[in-house]
Image (cartoon, rainbow, N blue to C red; front, side):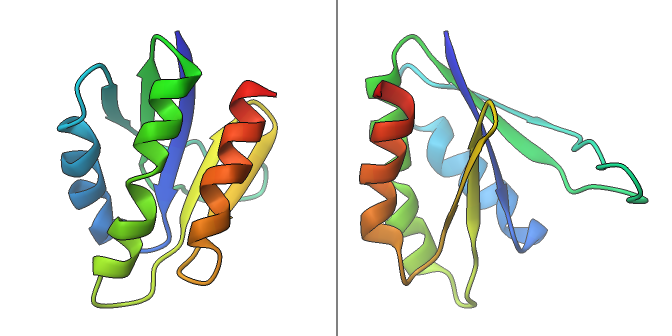
Length: 106
């Protein structure tokens, strides 16, 4: 299984992202409590997204630019795998798919 974590700059949008990704066949999407970094008092929930292949995760990430553009307010979706993080915004949404593909598939 290949796993990534996602979180949204506006935590009220996490449910909508979870719903969107949950409709993609072959993905396992679980919302869990975030872990605060050292010195932080709390953390927002994250989505843990798992799939049998990196290709399926890249396809799932392909839905994020449209998700971002459809929001009423500006949001950032951060994607994390191991020690790599990519922040996806409306400004870099099209490049994000290429970056995530490279991070997942080398």
